[in-house]
Amino acid sequence: MTAFDSGHESATGGSPQAFGGPTPGSAAGPDGRTHLSESLRVDAVSKAYGQVQALDRVSLAVHHGEVVALVGDNGAGKSTLVKVIAGVIEPDEGSISVEGSPVSIRGPQDAARFGIRTIFQDLALAGNLSVVDNLFLGRELTKGPLPLRQADFRSMRRRTVEVLDGLGIGTIDDVDAPVERLSGGQRQTVAVARAMLTNCATLLLDEPTASLGLREARSVMDLVRRLRDQGTGILIITHNMRQVFEVADRIVVLHVGRVRASYRTSETLPEVVVKAIMGKAGNEGVG
Image (cartoon, rainbow, N blue to C red):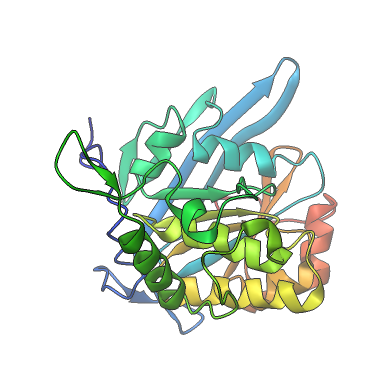
């Protein structure tokens, strides 16, 4: 048991990082922005599937108030790494640290308890349920004495509105509407709001704009910026180089399961990153 292995999460309390609470250990980075302490570190993580080495001693770090873009060609190991961090699969070797302390993540519930939330491409939303129901699915608020406790719909609705407002999401007018009636960008924001409802220090986003139009993709990127500015550490997988240079503070390039390069966005160019993705350049090291 670690210092982070305690208690049950509360759906009524948001992350202090997500909603403006101060986080100790801040420092000004080379880009002039204030970067806070590490929210997540992956050290020498390896994963093989038979003879296929999906990850080979991959290391990287994400700080509070920072966006790290994880890029690479198909089959580079990006999704495998995210699944390892999220607790979906177990690595063969390596370690994960949260807030500077090693943790054991053996499943998604462990990851969530350590403040790691993941939004995969399919979003995992229930289309026939409302925005409120999706946010609280499986963790409903209740009221009344046992054994007659019942769902507290008023409190869940109020909390949903608070979370959306706190994230600066003004595109969803009716939180009682079924999610299937929402646009792709609105569904993405619902998934983010659900992740931020409880303790979320590190947010993993797997291709969050892959199926969105230009305007909705821009809205999602604006949301990523707001989360960063509120102190959340974000690891984002994307193939969109324009978005990478718009929102990321650092870029980590994976190539055939290894860290090929790590760049500060302000100190590199798209063509340099593309060459590293193709395996033609790089500065191999820790992200």
